Length: 287
Image (cartoon, rainbow, N blue to C red; front, side, top):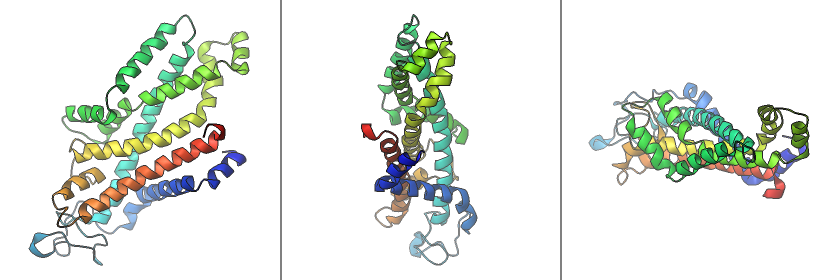
């Protein structure tokens, strides 16, 4: 960020809160597993079970208590952060790569003899956007016999690029009308060279904002898939599966649902606030 852009970002209190939440999530995902003392997949029947077989509440042994299988909730939240963040970042990287490629191709052929390519790609995007995103993700996730981290990334990335392609296409069409691109075209540079050398570097701002919002969407989508048991398979700790495992005990012990729900809420809120702050800082006139 340039100095004026950074100053605008730092003056935005909501953006700073979002950046703080994202930094906290990243720190938990990277170093949290070395700070917790319990294995998230191992039951502690000695200290993790209350009367009548109910999960134990917060104690000096388990700061957030245990779940229905006497596993430490704090450890599962910490390890779940690593799963959610790694899945979201990898899936977002795949989605941004596909969306940028499709958007550049569509934008570069918009007003040329190859305009049919642009129209075909946009009809494909329109068809994909006509389906509710989470419904499409759930359908693809359910179609897989067994879901691991790699297949989750592919499913989320392969369905999350549609909006990015529209953003890149619109910006590419706008940039192609500017003088420096017209001059490059007049000098005989090939269309793909113009797109890669002149247009793509000027898409950094919109792509940064889109990436931040996409990560939030991916975290929510991964949690939904895990909740519906078509995500990463147990006993791997994920926030969505923690929600499902605790829903049957919500009346007796709402902590089992509230803790992972707060984790999901803060993660999604953090990336959304960060994305909005970056948008306002990078494009103050459009905010």
